Amino acid sequence: MPAFRGMKLLAMDHKFYFHLPVGLGVFAASWALGIPREEWLWVVSAVFAVWMAEGFNTAIERTVD
Image 1 (tube, helix red, strand yellow):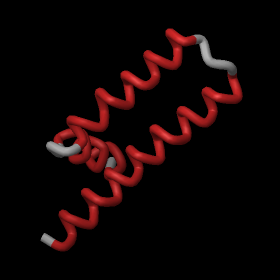
Image 2: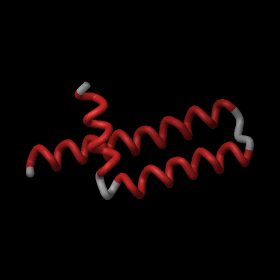
Image 3: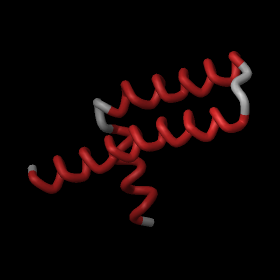
């Protein structure tokens, strides 16, 4: 499936190696701090927005190269 191939390519990108553990660390810190549900929505939205932006950036770089 093309979507899974794209996710695999993104996971192998050297810049995503930084974004993935930091995002997971944000999730862990948010859980440890016991933030309310409304704030969880903002945290999850922000982390996934960064991951999506990195995915778009990687796709554009691979297309241009």
